[in-house]
Image 1 (cartoon, protein in one colour):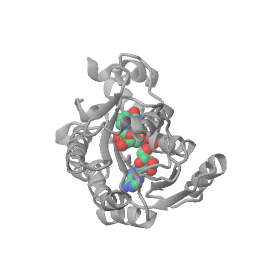
Image 2 (tube, helix red, strand yellow; image 1 turned 90 degrees about the vertical axis):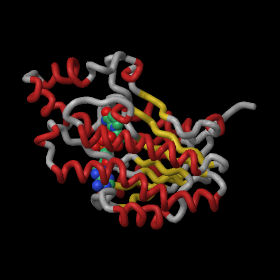
Image 3 (cartoon, helix red, strand yellow; image 1 turned 30 degrees about the vertical axis):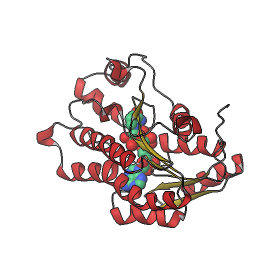
Image 4 (tube, protein in one colour; image 1 turned 135 degrees about the vertical axis):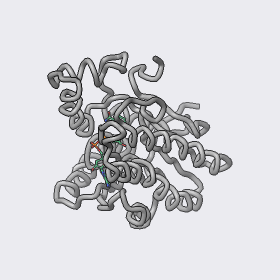
Length: 261
Ligand code: NAD
């Protein structure tokens, strides 16, 4: 039997998808035929224009729903407003870089809320919908930092390890159903989140931004190349295919060899 990836008839909700990896995943899902719900905490014309662009280019239904993933009730409201959620991608994320003694407590709380707790709230709301539909896919965008650590990223590393743990529990609780849950663990992908880390990294290591990119940021990525948002979208789409139906509770690294070191 040949495996094809046709997601028509499915609705995918992707948190934090008005830029970067989330937007890349939304595009790949739409190209595979899924209706998509984009999200972020803003409610600008440009946000809604992104959904229109996807709908116009692919013919699927695409909507933008504003919801702040730092707030549990808004995470749940996003899924309720979507109405259907066959595929849930927990992708919203922020970063802050500082040594532990100087790490601002409010940044710790925000990173834990947005990068980890939001996935608990959306999953709690989406699983009953998936059970009713008899099919579901939960994809958590974790990180190489869900499997390994770096200095100065206490909250991010803690949150991403937490997301990998939540992925395993979700998989076990749905193991007997046609529902899977996996985490994608990207290495460095050139998105606004990474670009914003370049000046801080350069300052910390007293380097130019170009040196910081090559010698520090890609230091642990043996391929010495950034992964692309299209590659992340392709990986997420594969996880929704029939070929991936027995892949659950695990992590898939897209990191140019980082975690093989
Ligand atoms: P990005 O900054 O382009 O995207 C982050 C998204 O989250 C944006 O759409 C942003 O609007 C949204 N967001 C932030 N705060 C939010 C909130 N309170 N409520 C709703 N949405 C919110 O960054 P990205 O690199 O595309 O990151 C996406 C995910 O991938 C994150 O979870 C990040 O940790 C993870 N990741 C990124 C990389 C990388 O190299 N870029 C590597 C590993 C993991």
